[in-house]
Image 1 (cartoon, rainbow, N blue to C red):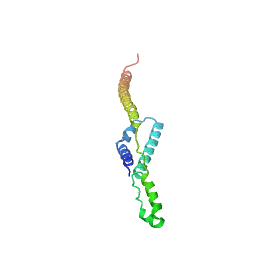
Image 2: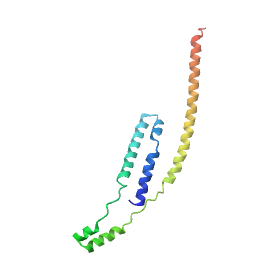
Image 3: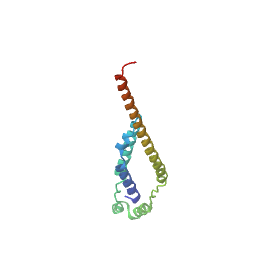
Length: 144
């Protein structure tokens, strides 16, 4: 496998290992979000599987001597020369850095929203406890 292809497969494999799917699933609150998340995860797994299998295999080497016997040296040498002159361009990632900045900003925003939500939950739980306490007191007080 070419260096670039192997690198893509390695990155995809590591990405799949480092994703906390269960943790992310716990953050979802609506059925629609869970459905979309399941679709995302299934799609990621399919792409990752394809990368792991299809693109991780080395191509079979060509037995040029076999073809020379049946076709002739001159024609086979022409094909061999053309085959070996093919250069597969290396993948250069120019977008990940742009999206990483956006992603990191979203993570900060997510943490802030999570903290705000937890504080609001605590406030509401305290308010519920206060109301329940008032209900108990009101229940024990005679009507005036």
